[in-house]
Amino acid sequence: MQTNLCQTPLFLGIKEEELPAILRCLGGQERRYSRGEVILPEGVPITKLGVVRHGKVLMEHSDVWGNNSVLGHAASGAVFGEAYACAPEEPLLIRVIAAEETTVLFLDMQRIWNPCSDACPFHIQLLRNLLTISAKKNLQLSRRILHTGAKTIRGRLLSYFSDCSKRAGSRTFSIPYNRQQLADYLGVDRSTMCSELSKMQKDGILWYQKNQFRLETSEV
Image 1 (cartoon, rainbow, N blue to C red):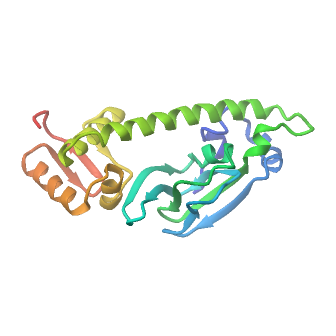
Image 2 (cartoon, rainbow, N blue to C red):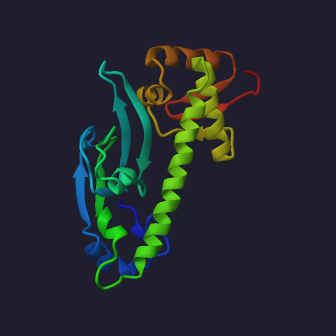
């Protein structure tokens, strides 16, 4: 089921009956992607931002040696690519791929920045929403830097799980990544990380099953 655009952060405060005219004004185009398909390749400039209508996308980066890092994700309703669309002279330093069957709505960034001749009143609201989205993404990047600052794999895992627990308001929470994606996000080896997770469960620090986790004790 596709997300109602009026319930997404980008279109917050905009009425549903206004959407058809807005999408025409912004050159809205939808595309569907299969799991693993590249949505935006690394090294190319873009002029459109994406809104995930259904599914989930991952932002990844690979170095010349093939080491992969997951920088973040965008679930249904989230925006991606807006920073590069605002600076079309800058080629993408990352690639965006579909983590599952995904539908994306693309919007022309220049049409958001520059009101049309009809002076559509929604432009100011969209710009306000876009600024809020960008600020929150900067905070997400700051959190990743914090999690990867620990020198040990256990330290990185605990930092990430602590943040997940706080944000969920519970010691039980789910994460948006599989094991490989979590390892890439934390910048560690997958096998070593999985071994450390098993040790942490044996030590009574946490319980987990697939992407469901529960912090068992404050003793680490």
